[in-house]
Length: 143
Image (cartoon, rainbow, N blue to C red; front, side, top):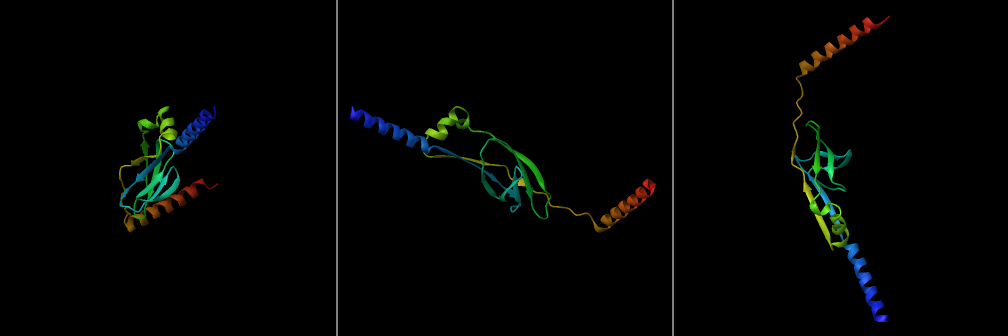
């Protein structure tokens, strides 16, 4: 009787230990051309490109890329779940498979567009037009 109890304890400890070993590590790598852009993922700054960041769920992510001298790029990236992360298989891959499963995703490289400044005389001309319009509209709307 005691022998069966010992075996049961070993079996339970083994199953608990096996259950504690499963893990899925999900990462997303974001690259830009040129590198060195600030990367915001769902409105949270995660680093400077190229950057590798952990994520928790599959689906759409909003990405904002900013770099001095370049236009801000607002885009998104969709991450599909692999077959072993679909219910109910995900229970087995996250709890019963010993070791860590690495689920690494790489977004396509995002190309930033250089910022083009308008010529100075064009900026001055637009400022004059804006001032005249503001003065004219202010004079017309005054009682």
